[in-house]
Image (cartoon, rainbow, N blue to C red; front, side):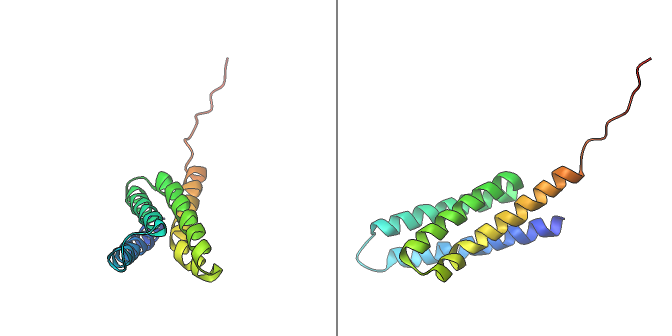
Amino acid sequence: MKTNYLIARLIATIASIFYILLVINYATKGDGLTNSGIVLIVIVTFMTIATIVSWIRAHIGAILLLMSGISFLVFSLISNSISMAIIMGGPFILSAIILGVQEEIRAITILPKREITTRK
């Protein structure tokens, strides 16, 4: 179970690093920042924060990763094709699903044991 957490967090971390480098490259080229560049910087910043939170709190991180993955998917869908949008938002959505499913399975299977008592 810990291996799945590690895999999900590593997927999100590698994707975050890739997108940070992509944004730095995008921001340093051209005439200056455009509206889409600013939105991209905000989304990637949110993704990075979500990735950091996922290392600290898996359940909250899963929710934030899902939100950031969907927002990046929508942003990419507006400016690119559907397949490119899935590739761009996919790692974060996949990480969120892995973390979220693991958290739900853990909540279901690890229940506090109750002691059965009878009244006399």
